[in-house]
Image (cartoon, rainbow, N blue to C red; front, top):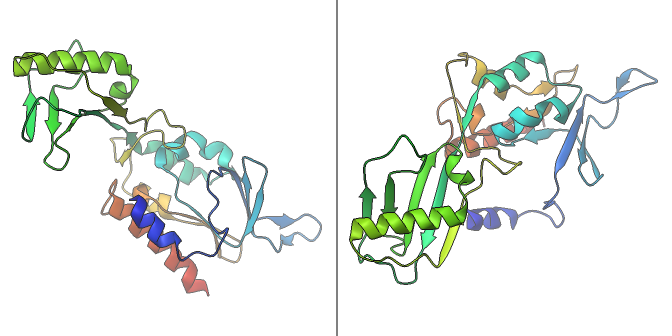
Length: 252
């Protein structure tokens, strides 16, 4: 992913991309208070560090979890009620993963370990080693519980399970890497989905831009949760971004 981003950003002019810059508030449909008509700057993004960026159009492509948590304070004026309701009705979950890295793994080929689970613990009952990374053991779990287990406990539990399954003393991993998608305030999870509260038109509602009085799209929305066919996939995120870029391109 990083190599793809680096290749794309090489084409941008210097200082086009602002790294480590959080957009705090989006002011859209800015109106001149004296003349009661749209001002020259149609939108303004206020960053957390105080920087203000004027724009003709703003594409919002933040994760749905971030939008669910911050939509009420992120837009001035506030989002239309129909869009706010669609945001809150959509489901948003987490797939947590932990990777255990071994310099000298106690196995010599790709393998998966599965054992009877227990309702008394939220620890997964499957460990997997892949052919592409034979020295790395991976566990995954739906929900944020795995991310909330301390690393010390994870190491102890995995070492105990492996020692029992392999019938030998297994060393502790040399390194452990744990995702934090749920705990990261800029993501708040990983996967959008339609739940029982969702309505058929919610995805279309999430996709619709915020228009100026003359029907110019001021704030546009992209992201996997705005794509009807490939929800929660990287292809959906990419496709929706191209969709909104084309929407702006049609104006000019």
